[in-house]
Length: 231
Image 1 (tube, helix red, strand yellow):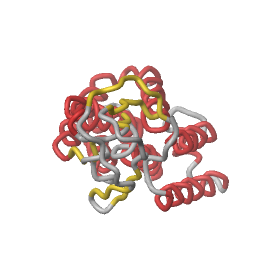
Image 2 (tube, one colour):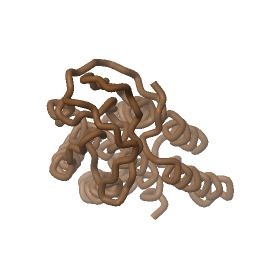
Image 3 (cartoon, rainbow, N blue to C red):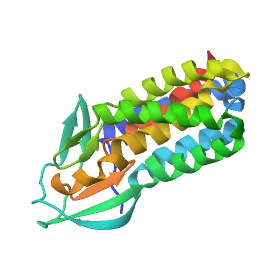
């Protein structure tokens, strides 16, 4: 299944954001920043790019009985506009997993947890904090699914990472890793997984884990994790 989780204007904005990161990477200003994530700089950039490109790909996993589907094409939440796919009149909601907003970030998070196994307890604590905070602000949106303010998850993840990194011998050097893992997993768990029981009542043609409503938070978490390492 292919549909974009955000309107084209925001997608263009994210491409410009990645373009800025690519420029600073090539002039050497944030090469060290990427390396602190434990990955080659070019690989991190490619993964972020794949997340953006993969935002339009959704893997169907289940069909749910739903209320009558809405026909609106654009839904607004906290000033951010999300596009919902059109569908024929039906009482079925397709539950899917977004490639760019869940699969790729999830795999990268699991790799970072394995790579930084010594931070296991900090990962758990930080992810728990982000999960609770995101879950408190996540809201069911008719015709869309579960949505969160785009900047809330990455900012909470950043502040949480800065706080918990003080308990690591490496100090602030591990803040970006904690920010990425807790921001990604905390958003997916707090916004999507803990609200799965509400999906069928929203009248959405497609409800995508890591897709419309939460993709912005997950994607921006990766950007902010990189920025953190540059401070």
